[in-house]
Image (cartoon, rainbow, N blue to C red):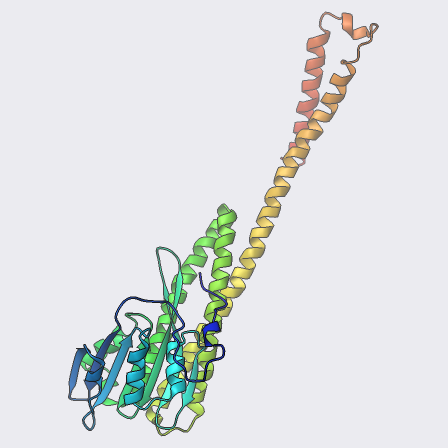
Length: 354
């Protein structure tokens, strides 16, 4: 289940820029890959030692360094020292509770955004922080864990399809942001399918588990909204800011990513309203079910009231009750009581109370 609040007490009292990893602990070694490309050149290789990243790129060659795993602080420090990254940037990279934001350090732009995955088996929504740094001819991306969201970008670079190989680092940074935003639609589609299943269950057979699933989805929507809403502001800043690091050609495509983000936010708001309505429907269903039960019990009680009255009269221990000496008295009273019960049932049925 998505957490709505997180503990960041480790940072209390520390100097700004102090590296403290806040996030899921991992025993795996970070995985670093490097891709160098131009319109006519492409080369990709895994990085076994962080020092292999410390090679100057050739003119016209764009380098993309991707780091999967940010829990080893010494690795982050080495990268920051070589590429002259601000200590506050390094602090934000290892603190995975950052909201999406953009910081312009003049010689590079730092972007934080959230990536989401939805598990089809456990119906769990998992979030991951992605940090991007781009400057002329260089893009560095940091992920908490290995993910396949960026694989389409790698494929386009490898095959030389599209505009990635022809443009600079700012367009590659846009491509990575766009891949994350496009994956939001995949996650929302799966969440929408889950909501449809719960709607059918809510109509057919609502139960306590249904209500728990609805509340879980509402929490997921709150988490999604809190993580994606600031991204609109980030893209808006990239569109409005006159930065030499962002070419005018890339701005046109950033507008498209901005529109997609707005569409994602609208979908999240629609899902939140649907889930709120589903809670109301569940409560109404439970109330109607309780009313049906009370109605059945009331009808049964109403039928037995005159029968109880008659049987109570014949339960009095008087010696001179005229019907006591009748030969057919007992079956006649039972028949009379049965007639009363049948008449009341017929009348209830005529009134459509049954």
